[in-house]
Image (cartoon, rainbow, N blue to C red; front, side, top):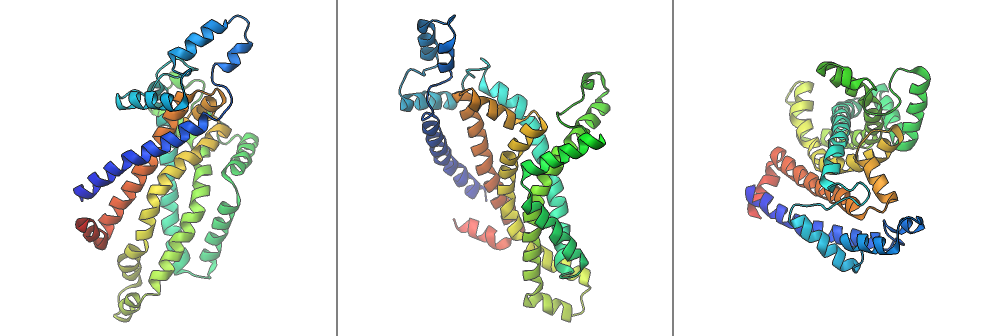
Length: 325
């Protein structure tokens, strides 16, 4: 297992290099740079702009700029934000926790609901529980996250049952530690529900499909013929095999929640990586953009690695394949 993990980690290096190289070159296709808009300011001389471009290596060809940025990365430095004039890692670190909190809450809620609902839907096929979960899945797949966010935002603005945006109340700093946790949790409900509804639909249908396939297998028929209780048949024999494909999906869900959270963060004013990436793009803050992209790429690849490890844990056949590699 450790040999497999080590080899996969080595494979991450060329993948990350390829992703960042292509992205850096694509961003260079945009006209101008961060300092272009400053040419309209009569108080800033062309000589000063030339000096600032030189200080940030923006006067060099795109390929040279990329290798200068890459050299900083290998030195543990993500560069300096052109707009904020502070290290990129400092900015990302201050926003990353907020996005992680939101994504983790949505991930836990999604899987906590998808697996039992998928099991119930499969066991009660064509009955009213199956029809209700089918309607939930259809609704979740039909409504884009941003549209659902607007709908719920309108609803809570009328009912006042939840905060309409942000991560904390104006009096947050005056609250006790426990009250601060409750305050953040109260603000977390709305964006977490939006992300959960979008992810729940697909996972629920996949879990239902997997469970139905397993319930039709011969060994399940044999287990029932032996007189085993239905609860044992479902949870001991069927569930373990039905959940294996779900484990593979887990890695993709981790990264997709981070990317999907970006739009929800912008709409509901949750101070996360989405807002930071939007501001960086609008300002053509190339080093902040690349820092965000690097974090997203690493999370995607690590998510896939985590999914493979979890799949090996629940499936002995996968573990045997890993030992042969």
